[in-house]
Image 1 (cartoon, one colour):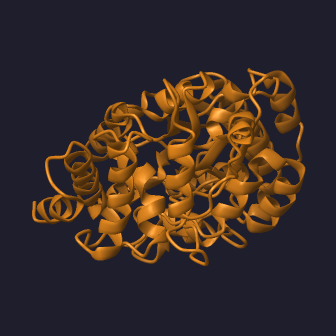
Image 2 (cartoon, one colour):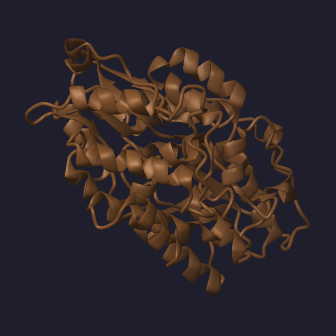
Image 3 (cartoon, one colour):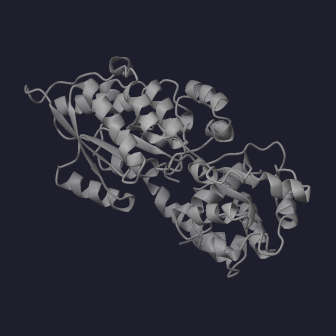
Length: 412
């Protein structure tokens, strides 16, 4: 879900490419505000959760390069992802927020609602050409507070050799998916693997079948969402998907696929570096099937946004905005996408990127219609996401029918 992923590309080459790029900050549109101090800003602080390699070093070098262009030194702190929000809320209450803050996009709403972030329009940072879903992910009450240089989503991976041997073509509809998964299930090999654990990851992996069928997160006990949950339930009940999916993470799903214990899997592009370490593993990627031919495949949008907190110092905020604009420049979007197996957020860049990176073409296509999880519910999304994964667990364990599971969860 998050886009802090490993890369198959040599890090040293990628960093060199990024640091050497011309980062046109003035072209990004960061403008100064009325200064709250006449002293020049020499250093700005940054907080993010890229605490694992190679992202830790790569993002660090990107920040350093952008700081240099803005004429400031970067004082960076990386924290574990699970600790970030509690830390930010504590900093907000104690008025010790950093100058630049990275957030996982579903968390932006909660932080923006506290008044802790400055609208990027205050600094005239351009939002032109960003995909609609990307802007939605960084928007709170019609104002853009954060921008993601790159984004990701999920699709259906399939083992080319296993499918060819079974005479199965990649499915495009639910009926085809059920038929293919059943035919590909044999011995210790399951036809499909997905993650249905009781966390936001379980909800994230369910959203494509729910949204593509017209399901709505505002009210989950509808026929459209019931049909989607029935699909998940049927796949587990008939043995095409292991019941262990109730506890698997997306990394576990990837491991099953790599071990040949799953012919297909639902997962994201961040798994590609691991998959490519096994040259014998020939795989393809297609959109997650829809219920009926003609429906649009709608996937959730993943990725992190960079924001400018309300620190009270307009001069420092203006410098921070230059760094945020720089991180979102065309050059940096392309460099980050190549290194991190993600997709540039600008639509024109994404098209070029897809043609040069065919393994990511399906994900690039999906980004065009991908939806921000907080797009409709804003800061209320976490509560509804919890209801969704609760219903999934109830149905898949056989404790209630999909319809009843959704009704029970919606009523909570």
